[in-house]
Amino acid sequence: MNLSLSDIVPPLRWTSPGQIAPIADDPRLPGVWWQAIPLERACATLGTPQVAARLADLAATCWGHLMVGDIMPLIRFADPVEAARTPEIVGRDIVHKLFTAALERLLDPAGAPVAPPVPVRPDRPLPEIVNEVFAGLDDRQRAIARDRLYAAQRATLDELAQRFSVTRERIRQIERDLRDHIEAWLAGPETAPLVAHVSWLRGRLGSAVPADDLATAVPWHRTDLPALEIPVWRFVRTLLTGYDLVDGWLVAGGADELREKTRQLFGDGPHPLPEAVSLVSQLGVREDVAERWIMAVPHLRVLDGHVVAWPRSVNEKAEAVLAIAAKALTPEEIQERIGEDYSLVGIRNQLTADDRFLRVDRNKYGLTRWGGEQYLGIREMIAREIERAGGEVSVNTVVTSLTGRYDVSESSVRAYAGGPGFERTQRGWIRVAGQEAAEPYSPRRDVSETRRCFRSRDGRWWHRVDVNAEHLRGSGSPLPTGFAAHLGMAPGSALTASAPSGDVVISWHNQPTMGSIRPVLVEFGAQEGDHIFMTVSDSGELLTRFLQSAAPSLPPLNRALHLIGYTAPVASDAEGVRLIGARIGLPEGLARDDVLGRLRERGDRDILAFLDPGIP
Image (cartoon, rainbow, N blue to C red):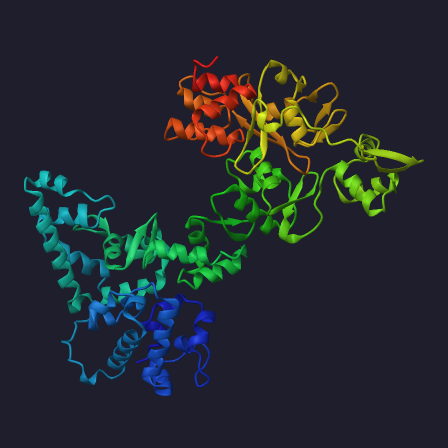
């Protein structure tokens, strides 16, 4: 006998030697001995129980999801019950006994019953052998085999019963008898070459393979069986017990389990594709199909030559994109690399709100864990330069420092340095303007009492702008005093909020006024009657959320919720009123009348009109 261990244990052929070696290596045997030397020599050197022990350890460590009979097909003939279970279920000790007994029978068959000689016809093709079992069937049996047992789209019992004018139970009985007939035939000596071929297939296919690979595994798989007029591979597919056909893949041991094990390999971050392929091959997936398997596993993605976990949220996808890039990117670059239907404004808002991301330039974000200095906007960066210089600094020094580190122009830096918040101390030098002795500005109504201002779940207050023709033409518009004060403004001050489409200036002279937001509206494709919810982040970015006008067919409660920016369904009127109360800053548990009263005090008559048309 010149068999190696890998000849009788198919997983040894597709499992990485680097994964096998720590368990199977022995100084008394050459490297990769399970493929390199005859099994008799290995067992003579180590002892058959020791070879079986190493094999049992490999089964527990690497192939726990496979059936024992798929690991060593010989066991199917000796113990078909245990062969149909996995090592995880059977346990290591029993697996060891099964492997030991199988190896001993193979190496010393003297005590085994002598099987009758099998006529050898090496020139006889396997399709011919398979066709024989169906050639003797009657028309009805062949139809059930062709259209139900081995069909791509199985005919139902009712369809076949109607076709042959019998009951569905009669069709079920014929099908059961056919299965028993095929099983008995497979146990006979004439099918030994076919059984050996199926064993070889298991080693070739591995733990997951595209279903089409079965049809092309050998040329004769595509040969038609004359008795059934189907390709042989459809019949062979049914012999691969333990394989599930899922989404175009043949998967051994359960598709969900193998998918989860594959996902777990990449839970610690991106891996270069060659490394990822090697990792996946340790699960029994052949290296030549490993990349396709990765792409078929939900929540994994191949991106820029790396494999990365690909969760549902845009925040986590942006984090994955940055981790692979290993450098700061613009929101536009992140959107392009994600390649899905996420708005640029939404991505920008998430980058600003999530602590995992750090704004490192005017329009670039990196990962906070990388470290580095946060970009806060030109005015704040000038103030930081002044603080570092001890309270006073040359404008030229500030210009050189900021334009050298950030994507800002010299003219912008000089304009901000000469604007509100800074004062000149000598020619070409500036400092932060002195603070007024007076108390900070306090508006008559704070933001929670201000019309069209709403608090989101993250604690931010947003102001709703109802888009009109003036906004679309590019005109400025007034802002409520309470909202402007919430942004840190006071009479005589100005605030520049940065946006991808251009800066938006908010100034406060007689009253707070917001400059043109037309570029933002164009980006969203906004029309009259639509809504823009806006606020300004701590780092000076204009954050916006767009909402189209509500459909007139919406129920009144949903139209009221639409005006606070809430579009999900609600279970009851009470839940809707509770949500509105939370969005206008009221504590939990207040009665409906309290919420309506606060809306009336704020002046939100449009919301009130939908909640209670009778309120004056």
